[in-house]
Amino acid sequence: MKTLIEQYIVNNHFGKMLGMDFEVKESGCVHYKLKITHDHLATPLAAHGGVISALMDALLGVGALSVASAENKVVSTIEFKINFLSPAFLNDELIGISKMEQKGNRLIIMSGDIICPLRENIIIAKAIGTFNAYP
Image (cartoon, rainbow, N blue to C red; front, side, top):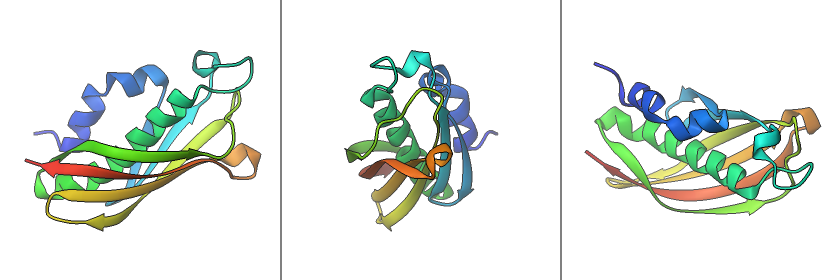
């Protein structure tokens, strides 16, 4: 039987289309990667905010899933707030890093940063989100 994380990987067609990939470092801590290509651009040089938002939602969601899956639960996004701090440019290699802030019986609060190591780890975006954990 596949783990919940393995099932997510198989079924996450949207993430594959965008070119996103992740690694669970430990429960609640996920590193999600994305290289900005022409397909992600909203201007001649900068990525669309929707791409950054999609990366952040995936980052926070898989972080929450890595926590909830220990109880054989899946998660859904209730809400998240994102701050865009710097644009992401063509060929930037972004890394999102998640952190669990709090876990209750049904709600998991996650935070995350998306950085660009090629540009001295400049912070592209920060976010906090709430996730519903359910069987």
